[in-house]
Image 1 (tube, one colour):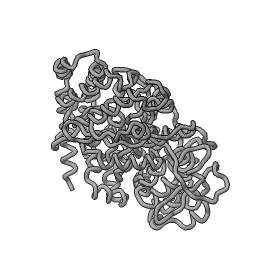
Image 2 (cartoon, rainbow, N blue to C red; image 1 turned 135 degrees about the vertical axis):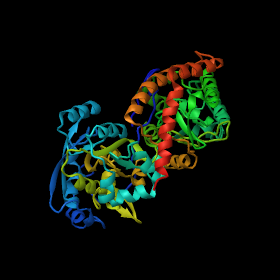
Image 3 (tube, rainbow, N blue to C red; image 1 turned 90 degrees about the horizontal axis):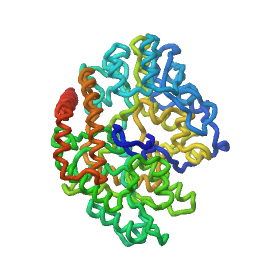
Length: 550
């Protein structure tokens, strides 16, 4: 994920430091060339892991066409498409399927639309999101997969049988599955975000890490008034970044880092945050932080560089963001500058209702990425068999760790990156894997938690564990709409989100009094929030129904 500065009125407004999965870990290796691409060693290929023989998708080698968005990570060399990756060099030996990849760096949706309109679709389409897959699937451009998965994908089918909530998130209202998902079973891989505080500032002021929203107010006030950074100047900007994740502490949904809409689940129903009285209470709290200078007054429209500087210049001591892109990365930047890497995880603050919530998380499905098969492909069964390999233990290991003895070793039954990856002088763990091994950030598969944990520091791991233990259960599942419903949802949500953005920021910044909140709710009703809620409720009821179907 990336951070972008934005202004009021945009659907995903506000700067959010969410550079997901950036970092490094320790490992051991006796490889001399730490910067070279991984080698597909004869030993690794000749002695496949158990189960690889059953991954043969065809009796003879077949060649298919693949298409996906791909931009090589900065610092990588000799990589232009997926075909340059270790995974796609090894996969023909394992499955008897060779994919010849074409990469696009242009606007993905536009290019996919043009390819679809031309009728000259590749066999395999990578990095497609569920909404696009459903759209083109309903138009007949993509192959329905549910029957083929039952027949030819035992690994994925078992996962769907054992986890009905995943099947429910993949199934369109018409009963079809059009894409292979990137699955996040382990709670640690879902909880990529958390709250962070400068632990050394707390120690300097003899304070405890905040447990509640009241504690947080007192800590931020002390940071501002008591020279928390110790430079003798009252220059602290106690909290930086998008403040909306604090709304979750009040028990309701809100957009924010990792949360794409304002809905939440409670008491078996899907509800809308901004029309709930608790949302008003949350805005009153955040307005207090803003008014007293405890929240960065420049948070709105803040650039990534400006946000980063708040921490590298030791001005800010509290925020919400990713364990990799904020906590791990910023501590590394501080340490490189000869400063104390003092950021540590903070428990999600408990609000007035006694809840702790982090709605800015993943469900079991990574929402932005998947793989589809064109309806025109002659190799539907073979490609389903090939894709199923990525849901096996051996396939996941190949994708997320590469070649044993080269990019990883096994230690006490757990894969560990070698120094070639973990201590690469040019690339982070994530960038190395994405550049040379496979698209670990976006490829349909079952994610190995050790991969994610290797991208964050020890402080990041501790923060991740803290988040997992206090994450709550109000995140809505991935919902599926009919094409007619989706058209209504998109039109309504565009106007409603813009209206919410404008008013929420006005309430936070004191441009509009909290006493006008009822007028704000009335405005939402006028735009059509009741209709939007009904559409979401219908989709959620379908999810519950499919989840309960064996």
